[in-house]
Image (cartoon, rainbow, N blue to C red; front, side, top):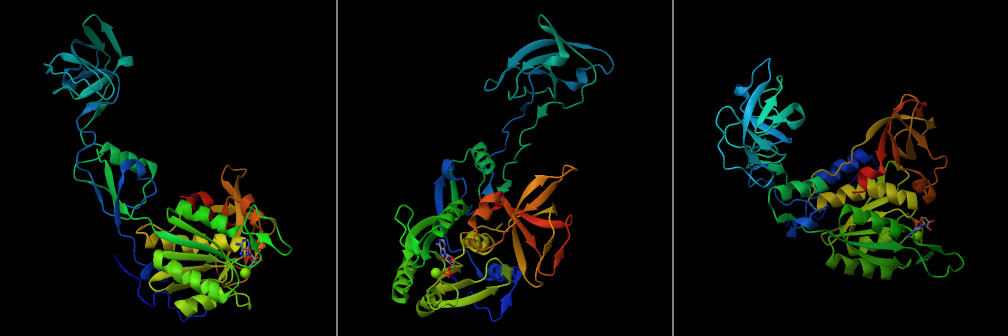
Length: 418
Ligand code: AMP
Ligand code: MG
């Protein structure tokens, strides 16, 4: 099991771009999760711990792709109908033991093993049957409708590489190879806290000055789709000793700790001081909006991720910093979501030197291509803007004026919700 070095998150700079942050995380984060074995049916979302190598070929034998007649291509006349004798029958799961001679055809069904000899299958729609004879139209190509053994997967092939997160079709291909169990990474154990004296648990009455804790529910759901094993550790009060004790205890039993709130430099923001007193904190001033401040640190060898308090900033920083960090820590290799180039259906002005995330959704433009629409308000606390949106338009650091119709990068939430 790899370990984080003590100064894993050390960073001397002042303001850091998201790309610099991601590059630093890439070089400094190593997989901490050891390996585990799961039943195939439990493989979805898990990260492969070893290459998946095919123990057999798929399909294991040559078979027919259609219902029809298996024939020797060389028996067929080029320009005239050919009449052959139907000598045997092969259905899926019921191979024929007959070895067809030249001039013979075998009645065959989709998925049935090809009898030895014939190399081509004529679809039944293109055949005329008369008793035990079949008349075949000219024009078919050699090898038509013949599925070769191993044409899907060759025996010994690396089907999926270590570090890959399993999708439904990946579980399916492992099943087609006959595998019952998969070597995967153990799920990361992640501790989650909210911080703030104003926070109330949904279901409780709201005292004056209180709001319900939404971040913990958003983050718990995000962590679930990232595939970690979550410890929801509740709400921490704005109290230095209580935060110190809770974080210290969490570090003993988890692979990573995530908090939201308490990260600014106000006098009630104690998370920063608490982490510094029990571990090390490297305050990263990310050049993004919304999203500053994000803190990365460690308590013993456990990474600490301190997200901002504002609900929109929480989501943006989770998706762009915490999610890739956790995936890498958990053993995944492909941790960067794909952004899609779409046309902006809005104009925008922004400050240079910071990346801005605009809450957006796609509509179909007049030419049929997608156009990004923008949620009109952009406060970092307006969670309904995220509910309205289906993704984020990312506006690059050097951009100051976006003209309507310009091409922008779009991150659909669906891209990061698995
Ligand atoms: P803070 O960073 O703690 O100063 O919080 C910034 C803003 O986010 C404040 O308006 C907080 O009330 C709000 N906030 C912090 N934590 C949460 C939470 N868990 N759920 C909803 N809002 C929060
Ligand atoms: Mg607070």
